[in-house]
Structure formats: structure tokens, C-alpha cells
Length: 292
Image (cartoon, rainbow, N blue to C red; front, side, top):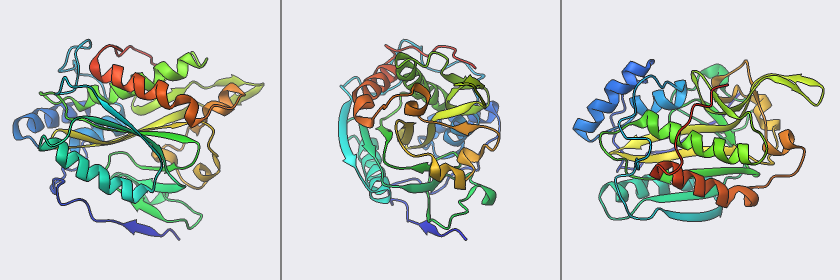
């Protein structure tokens, strides 16, 4: 039996989340509505993160910044921090950013071992080992966070018109850039699925399915992003065996260390990944077609 940890959202977050949309057209419509109302909660963010849909032309030129501000992005290394406490602090920071009280921020961190379930998590996705699950307000389904996994949370105000799909693509591009630089030249995207993947094939004499090395789950509230991306560096994979990661049963999960045959740590990648995210958001690192 799974224990569920329910936590109250910040009073600053918009309460009315739309039901998750199922197509790229729905996401585009939600983006347009959000741009006119100023409340981009739920639908577009969930769809972009869950489906990997990308059939529309980005609202922002690939060489332009997707951030509303031209001020430098503040990057903070938070170390190892509790998931729920950090979630609440994200909500507070997002509200402050929406109000113009702070600038854009990018948090780099690790969490203690924690299962988190997005709004589209299904009962069959949940862990069979009895460990608690934190139900959160991001898109996507269930995943695991823990030591050895680099997590980055951008708290940024998006430029208008809001384009959540483009935002997700830029985060993916940053991760792909870093992973390819490490030597995994085939890293890329899988159609219909968010995140960063390695293709199916023979590795070390063993046939392996396509494998996710980085997961993305986001929320956009009042035009400000929350949650973000997790990149598996040298973490254990044991906890993934007790869930259906991201609701995907026909693919695998891997780490950079396992794929490269050498130890790749969070400390090794903190600066490269935060720099790549900053460049992708500002348009100096352009989104390319890296389909597997």
C-alpha cells in the first residue's frame, strides 16, 4: 500500500487548474488563453511536459530570449534540500517573481530520496514498496528524486505570448547539449515523450530499450515557471523498479555514469547544466532537431 503525502499549495498559486489537454492543438489554445488572461496554470504546461507535443511554430524566435527580463539570471546552488520545503519555497519565489519583487532565478540542487507524483499520475504508476509519495502541482506523472541526481528549477517569468512547449524544448536542448558533450552523441528526444533519451540498441553486448536519462515536469503560474528538470548522474536506479517512471512502461531509465562507464557526479555537471539552461533560455543555445 502506498502512503500519500498531501501538502497545501501556496496561497499565491492560482487555484483553478485546467484539465490536462491531450493534443498539441489544445496546448497552443491554452497558451493563447493564458497570454490574454495572465493565468497559465495547468493545461499548456501539463501537455508540453507529458506529451512532448511540438507541432506549432514557437512564439519566440529561436535566437531570442524566452525570458521577459533582460537582467542576468541568478543561479543558486542549494545543495541537498528537502523536497516539500523546496516546493513551498518555489511557490513563494514564483509569486514574488510574478509581482516583480525578485528577478529570474535558477536553482541547482539534490533531494533526499523522494517519490513525487504529477497531476496525471495513474494508480498503477505508484510504488509497490510502501514508500510515501508527494503529490505535487506539476505536469507529468510519477518519478523519483534522490542523491546523485542533479535537479534544476528555473523560476523565470516567460515572455509574452507565452509558449510553454518552446520553454520545455529549450530545457531539453540544454540537457542534450551537456549529455552529448560528455560523449553520448545519440542523446535526443522521443516523439510524444518529454525529457532526454538514449536510443535502443546494443550496449556492452546487451540489447537495451530506449532509456530516459533526464525527466522534465513543470508548472507555469501567472507566467512564471516552477519545477524543472532532473538529470541522472550517478544515482541508484533501484527506486525506479518499484514505479512506472513517468507512466512509461515500455522504456528504461538510466544514468550518465552507467552509460559512460565512469563516475559522473552532480558536482561535475552543476556548472555545465546551469550554464546551458541559461543559454537555451536566452536563445544563444538554439533548439535543434534531435529526434531519435
